[in-house]
Image (cartoon, rainbow, N blue to C red; front, side):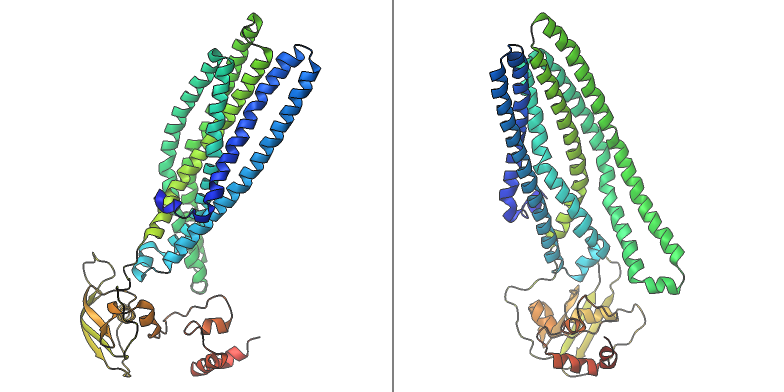
Length: 457
């Protein structure tokens, strides 16, 4: 899964590397400042050394500005890397969806594909940005603050170490409980999008049969399911922050009490105690950032799996090694054809079909609703593959043709018309992108559509 996702970073590898480097640079600058503050208090103020205070103050200002520059660059690089990564994921998914067979589309459903292209990719984008920035910044900040604390006072720093270990174990168990709920949320999103899609696309039917109340209840039910799942997950995560604040502020009180004792007996300087308290707050912020990263990663795990499924999906309909690039004529032959939409179906949709249609011949296929008339026609242009037997066009098995060559020779008038965004002329040229305007007008006259089109503004 990770290999599939990371392959989409592509041209954004450089900024993806620069982002954590800038974050670590910012952390180093932030960790230097408390040390300098402690020296100003202990050496500058304690020794009434004004030149030392000025020199150290100027150095602190330079370090602070440098940290600010690192932070800004990290934000810019992180935004560029995450947005580019999301763009590449959408493109990879969309490009692969264009190769899907009808069976692949049936497998995922339209609403699920929409959710994966939008909500799931957005989750991955946010998680990737947090990984590049906070997931690098927080551990580095916590480790450096811990090391600096041990350098100043090993005895007092043990308090931080125990607190961090306790919080790490607590966060692990809380996030583990929340993960199962986040994994279920996105399946609920599919149901919500399905409800919206069906309602909007069939709004005329809904209004004609006065089903607005039913559709509202259906939508509210789907939205309520998402709310309940998120609530359960967030209730598990919500306990992290108060426990963390309690532990860390307890550490501050303990450090203040023990530190004051060490200052009195001369084992610790006042400036050093100030530095220790500053590092304590750094550790607190680092733990809070890590908890946010864990929440986002937990949420994005399900999204990552769903995106990977789409990118790795391979269409069952592929070109042979040496495809036939020309259709000799329009003759069609079905030889002992058997077909079902699912391989594990108990009963095939079509069975023992033998049919011969000569080139130029007009044939009508009559049958009741659901008798597989459309399924039969879909096999001609190889929108599905037969389970048994073969379908031949121009005397050649359709599986031996180049898919684009075959489908360019099959004209289809759909049961349900679809208009894409753009002009009428753009839609007319779907059948032939190089058609002239006069050819499009002729097609409209043949379809008796020219009169109402000409009346349009």
